[in-house]
Amino acid sequence: MSQVKLYDTTLRDGAQSEGISFSVVDKLNIARKLDELGVHFIEGGWPGSNPKDIEFFKKAKSLNLSNSRLAAFGSTRRPKAKAYKDANLLALTNAGVKVVTIVGKSSELQVAQVLETTLEENLSMIADSIRFLKSKGLTVFFDAEHFFDGFKANPAYSLRVVEVAAQAGADAVVPCDTNGGTMPEEITTAITAVKKQTKVPLGIHAHNDAELAVANSLAAVNAGATQVQGTINGYGERCGNANLCSIIPALKLKMGIDCITDEQLAKLTEVSHYVSEVANLIPNAFSPYVGSSAFSHKAGLHVSGLAKWEESYQHIGPALVGNKPKVLVSELAGKGNIIYKAKELGVDLPLKGKEAQKLLEQVKLLESRGFQYENAEASFELLVHRAKPDYQSPFELVDFMVVVERRRRLPSQKSLEEMLSEAMVKVRVGTEAMHTVAEGNGPVNALDQALRKALLQFYPSIAAVRLVDYKVRILEESVGTSAQVRVLIESTDGIEEWRTVGSSTNIIEASWLALADSLEYWLLKQKGEK
Image (cartoon, rainbow, N blue to C red; front, side, top):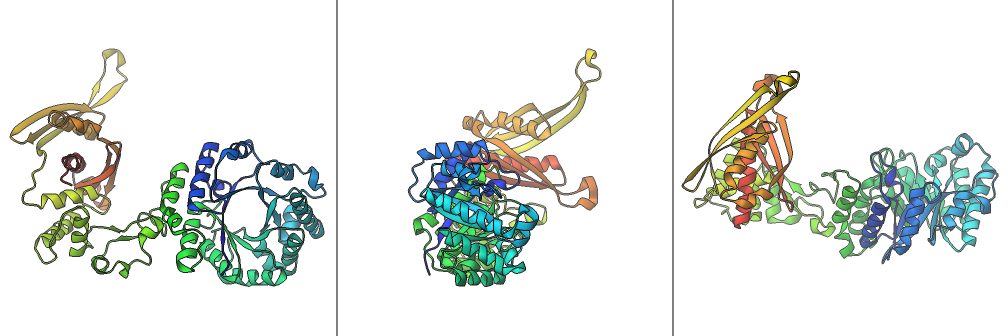
């Protein structure tokens, strides 16, 4: 099969996703990452539509791209206008790039209902625009908007649009599933028909409104398309665009098309997460190939097989796309999960010994009481270490008490009242006991302050640890305020992050357990016992 070219439109189509707004600096940084990934074309935006894109193309001249070519996006000339006078087309010629993509209607109904012009005038708009851009020495891709819907309603006219674009000199014609509702077999039929109509290289631009954008893109490639347009993580308007993070490994690993190198493919997960970070969106853990759960294993049977043969429950090696396997520990786990996970932590548990079985039974017992370890791996690591006969905890929790009261501030401020939270903590470090008291902004914060106050005297570096997230889950809603609760705490030292869990019918105790685990885990890591 011919080489397939990757065309990324994250900076334009992806930015149309709800909740995304890239700055010029964001777009420049993402372009550099896409270049590292080996994408052939990076669509930078629509220079004729807004000041931000105009600024981007000015600053993009300083980009030293090694693998990618920057493209500008625009539309055909307006009805009854002259191409050489059209503001959008002139903006494309002044963008400072050698590749441009223009969009035009390829559906009879769209021409009549949206453009409100004649079918012949639409053909002239397409031809005039392409000829004008080609006269400026530019590579021109034509995005045939609404092609597949138009093909179903009036195939003759949609095919005529492609033919006219090719005759005008388009370097590639890209049929678009603009509304995202076409089925893969319909994609195949339409692309096959287009190939019979013209010899110009074809592409595919699919939207994901029917959850088929990736499947439709691959179907188009199978039918002869040699350019695939999409976005990182499938970002885009409505339900998004075709996800290049799924398309790229499918092309290379499943279809044998070397669209990028092996080294570039290994950057895929990194690029996916980077774009999510810049977009200020949480990465989808369940995304194929690049999600943090894409190669996670929870069932004991699966982990047992994985330990014997990596391909037993994985369709590819995670490292190929820069990802890694993740074994989860839960009440569904078997001994294999415990042994595998302990080995990751540097603790060897014998397969036939009792240690792993006892630890498994402990996990299942604790999970029946509301604990959950698959999202609190730091707490599980502590269970593993605590199971070792020679393990010594850096501190021992003896007792705690929390007082919460409402009190007035001053007689002159009778209408203003405040809540006071005060915690008393008893902690033993070695043979020395500490008794500290602290106030806080709420009972959990007061506990945190009191515990730190005690431990700082022995472990000054613990000041680097701070809590960044605190989540409470009610496990038995039907019993109201007496329900079992689970507390998940996320902590950081500014370099790494970890999660710990506590569970109780008392939310303060559950918080106490998770908080104590967080600090013990960090101290354990600092001692190098991890």
